[in-house]
Length: 280
Image (cartoon, rainbow, N blue to C red; front, side):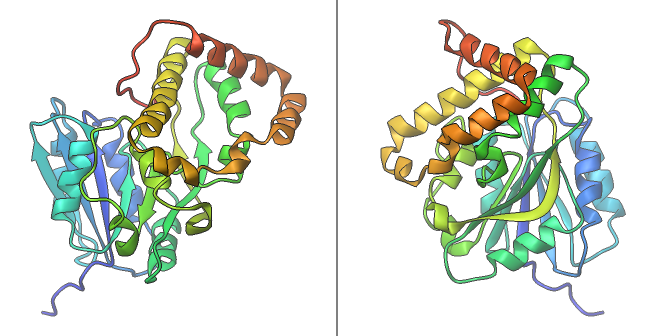
């Protein structure tokens, strides 16, 4: 029997108590189009639910030797530590970092692999789609938020981002920070970042208090990078602060803007913690 081909990419999924999402995440990866070989590493960190059992069941049922699923089970919590464990175990130069609650379209993983198969440092992601929300507040916020230039024209990478070998070489181990996706993205100039048309679905947290908590964490994460890695701010995307585009978004959706603006105001009020919080 011929041996399985070496993977061209390693998909690293940090997972902490993701039993409600990990099955769908892995199923959609398995449904990826094409025949590009890639491995999936689920790094279950400090899980107390059925995340490991569900992921292991998927791995055991996998019939494609070119796309193996491996489980790394650690009792040490923390997303950045999980990312590092995944990197340490990865066998491929292309690294795709995927949140456990994200589902990818069939064409995204092969498109990322094709785009990153180059000797030049590159960072890439797909085109995000917000999963349908139950809360009216979240629906209004998401409707406005996804029209902002940072989302529509940039390469934000929330939920999934990928780098090739020369790109990953730009930093050593993952630092202990809040915002891993921002840190990775700002290690590349805007010209080195690529947005692909293939989509992925990302859930947004439900309700006003959750949105305030997560937005506060996101803002704190950006400030932290400015404090610890100020040189990276030179790679910030100017389009993210486009006033004209924001004005158009306001005129198209004044209710969404009111919700978005109210949450932004609450985030700036004193109080609240800026440590890690789920994005949904």
